[in-house]
Length: 126
Image (cartoon, rainbow, N blue to C red; front, side, top):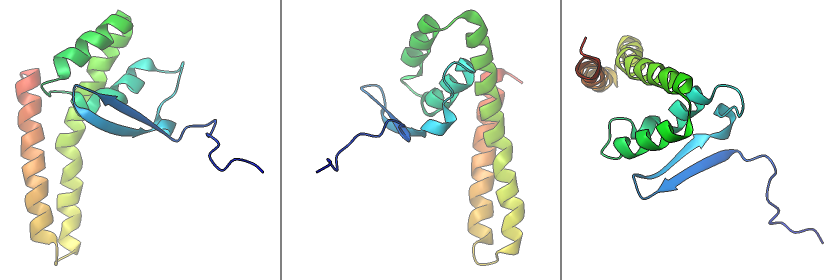
């Protein structure tokens, strides 16, 4: 009789667990080994960016990657923060069609937009 507890050879999810900031789960399909390490690291580390544990993570990643990947990683983080500032604007616009959640959704979108925009301006001094 075959064991029902066989481990899959193709992991669907990768869990990051550490003392620094709890547990995060990312979709394994977004990780592309031997392709673009910088984008993989940015997906993995984004939940920790600008947190109290970020300096530890930043030192760790700086020690295991080369300068080219480190530079691209910084570009990806900048793009992710910029995306947070503009992506919610689509929610604001689309909420016009849903009267029952319009006010709540637009207020939330405004809050997220201005928070991310302020963080972007402060972090990148623009």
